[in-house]
Image (tube, each protein chain N blue to C red):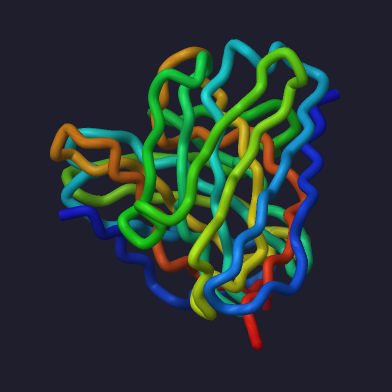
Length: 109
Length: 123
């Protein structure tokens, strides 16, 4: 399957921990990348590979994977973390079939 | 500083054509696969196309295969997307995207994104 499934919306209290998940068969073979997108802005890569953060991404962002599920965890969510989050990977069939999840709207309460 | 600047978007009638350009700077353009990703108004991200670092390999999403052509000019540090037979459902912001991993197309770890250019297909 080449689909990635995300919960449409998740909320978290300020300073608490939140996990955003992404499910898909391709995640058994490939790591997910995670992107943060704020209104009117281009997406920003926050996690890639096993659990890698690009330069400038706070260490409260972390990634993990188990079976067909990838997770993005924000430990101590801040108001500025309110955004849409997308996962991305490629199909496991051997063809380059790149897919994005439908996105999760994170609200920080 | 890595910069990706798209241009060429605009209003086009159904069935028409448009060519998008992406001017890249701040990195060795010829060493990285490049991609196009689009986002319809109020919708999520949709993958469009990829090209290898030397232009020898290309990939297209099924939704644009046969209608869009990706290319690059490494001497000009520029990525292109030629779009033809445009449909209303092609209306979106089109992002030029750099891949973090050099050389091969990975289809993920998109580490830099342009600000996007809006393509509107309407009569």
